[in-house]
Amino acid sequence: KNFYDYSLIGGDCQNFVSQCIYAGFGGSDDKTAISQRSFPMITTGRSDSYNWYGDSSGGHSPSWTAPRYFSEYVQRASKMTSGARIEAEVIGSFTTVVDWTLLREGDEVIFERGNHATIVSSIEIEDGTYSAHDIYFCSHTGDYKKKSLDDKFSAGGQIIRPKKCYFENNTPDGGKHT
Image 1 (cartoon, rainbow, N blue to C red):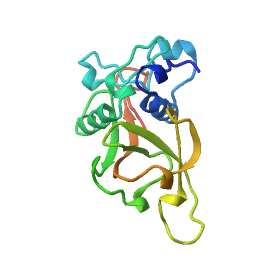
Image 2 (cartoon, rainbow, N blue to C red):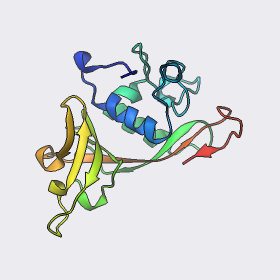
Image 3 (cartoon, rainbow, N blue to C red):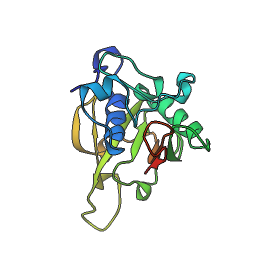
Image 4 (tube, rainbow, N blue to C red):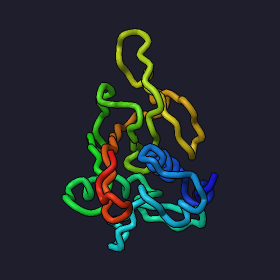
Protein backbone atom coordinates (compact mmCIF):
# COMPACT_ATOMS: atom_id res chain seq x y z
CA LYS A 1 0.00 0.00 0.00
CA ASN A 2 2.98 2.33 0.49
CA PHE A 3 4.56 1.69 -2.92
CA TYR A 4 3.58 3.36 -6.18
CA ASP A 5 1.13 1.38 -8.34
CA TYR A 6 2.16 1.15 -12.01
CA SER A 7 -1.03 -0.64 -13.15
CA LEU A 8 -2.23 2.25 -15.26
CA ILE A 9 1.11 2.97 -16.94
CA GLY A 10 2.24 -0.35 -18.35
CA GLY A 11 1.69 -2.92 -15.62
CA ASP A 12 2.54 -3.62 -12.01
CA CYS A 13 3.75 -7.24 -12.14
CA GLN A 14 7.49 -6.72 -11.49
CA ASN A 15 6.77 -3.97 -8.96
CA PHE A 16 4.65 -6.49 -7.03
CA VAL A 17 7.35 -9.21 -7.27
CA SER A 18 10.05 -6.70 -6.28
CA GLN A 19 8.02 -5.81 -3.19
CA CYS A 20 7.75 -9.51 -2.31
CA ILE A 21 11.52 -9.98 -2.69
CA TYR A 22 12.15 -6.77 -0.71
CA ALA A 23 9.93 -8.06 2.12
CA GLY A 24 11.60 -11.48 1.96
CA PHE A 25 14.99 -9.87 2.53
CA GLY A 26 13.61 -7.98 5.55
CA GLY A 27 12.41 -4.76 3.93
CA SER A 28 9.89 -2.67 5.86
CA ASP A 29 6.48 -1.52 4.60
CA ASP A 30 7.06 1.68 6.57
CA LYS A 31 6.47 4.74 4.37
CA THR A 32 9.65 6.45 5.59
CA ALA A 33 11.83 3.39 4.92
CA ILE A 34 10.36 3.13 1.43
CA SER A 35 10.77 6.84 0.58
CA GLN A 36 14.38 6.71 1.84
CA ARG A 37 15.00 3.58 -0.27
CA SER A 38 16.28 1.76 2.80
CA PHE A 39 18.07 -1.58 2.66
CA PRO A 40 17.45 -4.08 1.17
CA MET A 41 16.80 -1.72 -1.73
CA ILE A 42 20.02 -1.25 -3.67
CA THR A 43 21.07 2.33 -4.37
CA THR A 44 24.77 2.23 -5.20
CA GLY A 45 25.24 5.71 -6.61
CA ARG A 46 26.22 4.10 -9.90
CA SER A 47 24.01 3.99 -12.99
CA ASP A 48 20.51 2.55 -12.61
CA SER A 49 21.66 -0.70 -14.21
CA TYR A 50 23.36 -1.41 -10.83
CA ASN A 51 20.40 -0.36 -8.66
CA TRP A 52 17.15 -1.95 -7.51
CA TYR A 53 14.66 0.34 -5.79
CA GLY A 54 11.12 1.67 -5.86
CA ASP A 55 9.24 4.19 -3.74
CA SER A 56 5.81 5.66 -3.06
CA SER A 57 6.15 8.63 -5.44
CA GLY A 58 6.96 6.65 -8.59
CA GLY A 59 10.75 6.82 -8.37
CA HIS A 60 12.27 3.50 -9.40
CA SER A 61 15.08 1.75 -11.19
CA PRO A 62 14.13 -0.15 -14.36
CA SER A 63 14.94 -3.42 -12.55
CA TRP A 64 12.26 -2.71 -9.92
CA THR A 65 9.44 -2.46 -12.46
CA ALA A 66 10.39 -4.42 -15.59
CA PRO A 67 10.90 -8.22 -15.57
CA ARG A 68 13.51 -8.24 -18.33
CA TYR A 69 15.57 -5.53 -16.60
CA PHE A 70 15.31 -7.35 -13.26
CA SER A 71 16.66 -10.48 -14.94
CA GLU A 72 19.55 -8.51 -16.46
CA TYR A 73 20.23 -6.82 -13.11
CA VAL A 74 20.47 -10.05 -11.07
CA GLN A 75 22.60 -11.72 -13.73
CA ARG A 76 25.02 -8.77 -13.70
CA ALA A 77 24.92 -8.36 -9.89
CA SER A 78 25.46 -12.07 -9.24
CA LYS A 79 28.85 -11.82 -10.97
CA MET A 80 29.99 -8.97 -8.72
CA THR A 81 32.26 -9.78 -5.78
CA SER A 82 31.74 -6.61 -3.75
CA GLY A 83 29.25 -3.81 -3.22
CA ALA A 84 25.54 -3.76 -2.56
CA ARG A 85 23.70 -6.25 -4.73
CA ILE A 86 21.25 -9.13 -4.94
CA GLU A 87 22.69 -12.53 -5.73
CA ALA A 88 20.30 -14.86 -7.52
CA GLU A 89 20.30 -18.08 -9.47
CA VAL A 90 18.86 -17.65 -12.97
CA ILE A 91 17.52 -20.79 -14.60
CA GLY A 92 16.51 -20.95 -18.24
CA SER A 93 15.71 -18.20 -20.70
CA PHE A 94 12.57 -16.49 -21.89
CA THR A 95 12.15 -19.05 -24.65
CA THR A 96 13.04 -22.32 -22.89
CA VAL A 97 10.49 -24.72 -21.52
CA VAL A 98 10.47 -24.63 -17.72
CA ASP A 99 11.44 -27.76 -15.79
CA TRP A 100 8.73 -27.55 -13.14
CA THR A 101 10.71 -29.71 -10.71
CA LEU A 102 13.22 -26.85 -10.33
CA LEU A 103 10.68 -24.36 -8.94
CA ARG A 104 10.61 -23.47 -5.23
CA GLU A 105 8.38 -21.22 -3.15
CA GLY A 106 9.64 -17.65 -3.42
CA ASP A 107 11.02 -18.06 -6.95
CA GLU A 108 10.20 -15.40 -9.49
CA VAL A 109 8.96 -16.73 -12.82
CA ILE A 110 9.27 -14.45 -15.85
CA PHE A 111 7.36 -15.39 -18.96
CA GLU A 112 5.66 -13.93 -22.05
CA ARG A 113 9.14 -13.41 -23.52
CA GLY A 114 10.31 -11.37 -20.53
CA ASN A 115 7.26 -9.16 -20.24
CA HIS A 116 5.43 -10.63 -17.24
CA ALA A 117 6.49 -11.71 -13.74
CA THR A 118 4.91 -13.76 -10.96
CA ILE A 119 6.11 -15.19 -7.67
CA VAL A 120 5.64 -18.82 -6.65
CA SER A 121 3.50 -18.89 -3.51
CA SER A 122 3.04 -22.63 -2.95
CA ILE A 123 3.68 -26.07 -4.38
CA GLU A 124 1.07 -28.73 -3.67
CA ILE A 125 1.75 -32.06 -5.33
CA GLU A 126 -1.52 -33.96 -5.16
CA ASP A 127 -1.21 -36.99 -7.40
CA GLY A 128 2.49 -37.80 -7.04
CA THR A 129 3.30 -36.27 -10.44
CA TYR A 130 5.01 -32.88 -10.41
CA SER A 131 3.56 -30.52 -13.00
CA ALA A 132 2.64 -26.88 -13.56
CA HIS A 133 -0.80 -27.72 -12.19
CA ASP A 134 0.76 -28.26 -8.71
CA ILE A 135 2.53 -24.88 -8.62
CA TYR A 136 0.68 -21.75 -7.54
CA PHE A 137 1.64 -18.13 -7.94
CA CYS A 138 0.59 -14.66 -6.87
CA SER A 139 0.77 -11.66 -9.16
CA HIS A 140 -0.48 -8.15 -9.78
CA THR A 141 -1.52 -7.08 -13.29
CA GLY A 142 -3.73 -9.91 -13.33
CA ASP A 143 -4.50 -9.86 -9.63
CA TYR A 144 -4.02 -13.49 -8.70
CA LYS A 145 -3.65 -15.15 -5.36
CA LYS A 146 -2.90 -18.86 -5.54
CA LYS A 147 -3.42 -19.34 -9.26
CA SER A 148 -2.04 -22.47 -10.91
CA LEU A 149 0.86 -21.95 -13.29
CA ASP A 150 -0.93 -24.48 -15.48
CA ASP A 151 -3.25 -21.62 -16.41
CA LYS A 152 -0.46 -19.27 -17.59
CA PHE A 153 2.49 -21.03 -19.19
CA SER A 154 2.67 -21.90 -22.83
CA ALA A 155 5.83 -20.38 -24.31
CA GLY A 156 8.38 -21.11 -21.60
CA GLY A 157 9.91 -18.83 -19.06
CA GLN A 158 12.80 -18.00 -16.81
CA ILE A 159 13.18 -18.79 -13.12
CA ILE A 160 14.94 -16.33 -10.82
CA ARG A 161 15.75 -17.57 -7.33
CA PRO A 162 16.92 -14.71 -5.07
CA LYS A 163 19.54 -16.06 -2.66
CA LYS A 164 21.35 -13.27 -0.84
CA CYS A 165 21.26 -9.53 -0.51
CA TYR A 166 24.67 -7.96 0.12
CA PHE A 167 25.23 -4.50 1.45
CA GLU A 168 28.19 -2.33 2.39
CA ASN A 169 28.11 0.59 4.82
CA ASN A 170 24.30 0.43 5.06
CA THR A 171 24.38 -1.12 8.54
CA PRO A 172 26.76 -1.05 11.48
CA ASP A 173 28.27 -4.47 10.73
CA GLY A 174 28.81 -3.86 6.99
CA GLY A 175 28.22 -7.58 6.41
CA LYS A 176 25.75 -9.51 4.31
CA HIS A 177 22.20 -10.73 4.75
CA THR A 178 20.97 -14.04 3.43
